[in-house]
Length: 603
Image 1: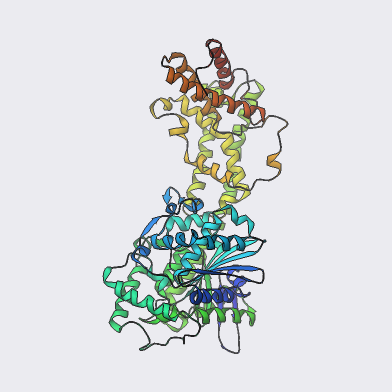
Image 2 (image 1 turned 90 degrees about the vertical axis):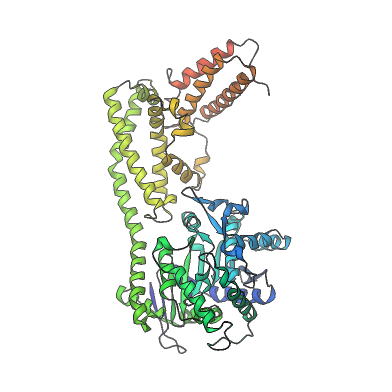
C-alpha cells in the first residue's frame, strides 16, 4: 500500500508501506506514545525500565542508557535463559542464539521483584501491552516481548506488541525463523532511521582496536538521551575525530556488504519501519532489511546523528498520517514514493539498488502465497492415493483383518503393491511440503492453516501405520533399532508438532460414542511391536531385576492401551481377533497365568 502525504510543514513527505501494519501504526499515536515512554525511560531509569498506562495501553519501556560490553557481541543459545524462551529455542534442528550481553541484562531485570510486579500489573485487566525501547533498550524490549509470548501470561493481554527505536539485532537466523514460524513477526516493529549505525553495528564481533571508539560513542549518546538536549549537527559536537569516524564507518560498511552467506550470524526479525525526513516504508523481509542497511549507509558521522533523531522521526510519522491526503496503490507510483520516502531519489547511486531491493522483496513476499495456492492444487492431485489407502483399510475391516498386519504380512500382494505405491507418492508430497516450509517458500502461518494441519494429521494417522509395518517387515528394527527410536520419518514429527500447536476446539474434547475411524496414536503399532519383544524377552529372562524392568514396561503399555480402547481412540482393526494387538493381549494373559507368584514388578 502506498500513501502520499501532503502537509503544510513538508511539501513532499511520503510514507510507503508494503503491509497494512505500517499504515495501522502510523495512523495511530502508538509510535509517538512509545517514543515518549522510551525518552522517559532514558531520563528516569538509566539501566532500567519504566511502566505506565496511556489510555487503555500499558507501556513497558526500557532505557537505552545501558553499559555496552564485549559480551554484547558474543552469542549464546537462547536456552541459557532457562525456560523463558522455550517456544523459540530452535528451528529446524538449529539452536536459536542471542547476544550474551543483552540476555544477561534482561535476566538481571527479570529477576527483580519490581519487574515481576509491574509486568504482572501490565498484563492484567485485558489491556493492550506494548514493550518499547530505544538503542540497547530496544534489545531488552524485544527479549521481554519474546519471554512473555513464550509464557502462558500472553493469553491474559488483549494484544501484545513491541516497538523499538534504533535497536541492534539480537539473534541468529534460527531465532528469526522460529519467531516467524510462531506467527509472532507481526508483533515487532523496529523503527530505524536510515543512517543510524546501531542497527548495523551489532552484526559481528568488534575488533579490540574499536573498543575505545565505541565506548566514547555510547557515552556521548547516553549524555544526549534527554529531551532538553539540543539536536545534533555535524561538526565539533560529534564525539569522534574524523579519522575515528571514518574507521568505524568502514568497519560497519564491511559488516553489511557482500553476499548473504558472508553476513555475520545476526539476522533481523519482525517489521522494520525505515524512516527519513521524507517519510518511511515498512519492510518485513529479513534479506531486504540487511540490504537496505547496506545501500542506505550515509557518510561518516550521519549514523551518530541519526541515532538521536527518533523523537523527530516519531513525530513526523504520526503527523503525516493525521494529515494524509490520498492513497495510491499503483505499482509504478508506489515504487517512486518508496524511493522518495527513503531519500534514495536524491542519490542516483542509491536509487537503482534500492529499487531492485524493494522489487525483489515484493516478489519474495508474493511467492509464498502463490506456492501455497499451488500446494492446494497438488494436494487435490494426491487425493486418489489417499483414497487408495482408505479403500484398503475398509477392505481389511470388512474381512475382520488389521490393515497394519495385512500390509506387514503382504496377505494380498497385488493390493499391497498398489497401497505401497500410494504410500510413496503421499510421502513424497508431504516431504516436499516440509522442505518448502523450512526454506521459507510458504507463508509464515502455513503450519497453522487448518486445511493443511488437518490434512497432514489425517495423513499421519492413515499412513504411519503402513510405514511402521514396512519397517518391521523388512527387519530394520534388528539392525537399526526400534521404529520409535531410529525409524520414524521427520515428516511425522513435524506434523505432530503442527497438530499439538493447533487451537483445540470444544468439540475435540467430547467423549467418543463409537470407535475412531483411525487409531488416534499413529505410533500405536510400533508400541505393540516393542511390547511383543518385551513379552518374548520376559519368557526367556532369568535375572530377577531384568524381569522386573520388563514387566514394568509391559504394565505401563497395557494400561495405556486399555485407556486408549476405553476412550474409543482406536479403530476397529486394532480389536480384530487376529490383530497383533489382540494376539499380544492373549499372550500377556497367558504369561500372567504362568507366573503363579504374581508379577515380578514391585511398586
